[in-house]
Image (cartoon, rainbow, N blue to C red; front, side, top):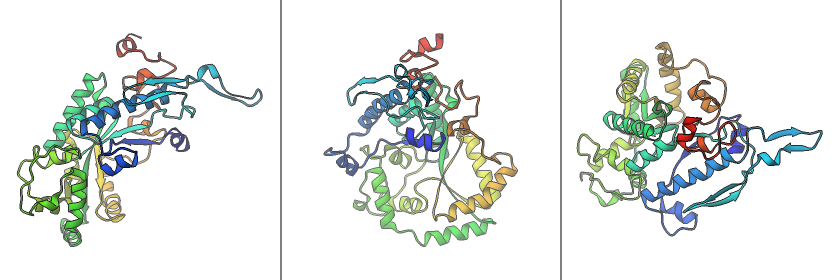
Length: 353
């Protein structure tokens, strides 16, 4: 991650995923995947380890690159990290000098109760999916929990998953949608949805209702169509809905209609932007860029140019923190930073300083 951040001049981001398939667990030597909430417990400690390496191993002025005297870095400013936890043990320096962001911009997409707690502590950007009421309630919950973690809730940017089918007119968009539906493969949709939810849909009849099942798959995906749904979904409806762009909301219409609905989503859910799914690549994205972006720019709600700086600066601006390229001190990684503030200081001590 540090090398990638160097190579991109600070434009690296990391979507933190705990993983849910058994195949992934077997690939790392386990017999089966850990239970859902335990995966997040392990991830919490994993984050502590990488924060210590990224933020606490090298001081800001450790690297001097003194060619004349043959000194790359001051050894006394490079520190060994010691971590002896329940799941990880590390006694080592970070092998790479600090990158422009140190810690990459942190994304997270788990929206279960445990996933939201993890997001409130660690995420700077969160991917969410579901209807307006579902997304609005999850946004509010993550922001509330962020405050309890000592963070500014506005520093967590929320992105709603969305599939957009746009045409020059509403009829053009509806014609595209009809054409796309001709290519939906129900068996393929079954396999995809079963993998996400951990539910074997092949054992259900098409008109069977979908009921909540807590398992070790993606719990938020199951909740979105059961506990948090405004009606009872059948397997057939889920396949038809999820067969185009995944099981997320869909906007179909002209550029003006699409822009209107995107603005409504932001107003009603408090999201900051959208994570666009595609149906046909690159056609879905080309349509959005050519038809929707100009309309959003005309309304003054979409940028005209890319701003300079690191990925974090692009998202938050240079006034985000005292060291805008890096993670803010109120974040869980902040107190572990070597340099302007003391390593391992508590949140209370940091506030006093």
